[in-house]
Length: 102
Image (cartoon, rainbow, N blue to C red; front, side):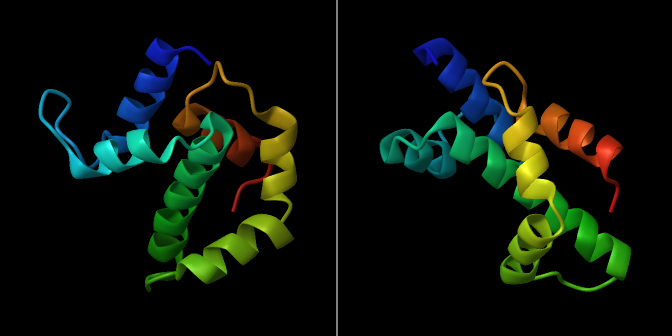
């Protein structure tokens, strides 16, 4: 993934937390960590899933339970099968949920 595409991925991941035109500690951390685009995308999918599970069950869903739900429920496998660097994490998450809704 080239620098421009990586920067766009970070913008997409941080959109809910950071103003696009201002400095953001989250974005700065992710840039310095040099995480793979695949890992960043999967983390964003997990974040969306955590929020949706919390909403569905009307209580806070922990990260540990979310990760177990993701892996044991077959969503990690779907992610692995469907992931490409060309797709945004949010779009990929929607595609996964079309195959296997929660």
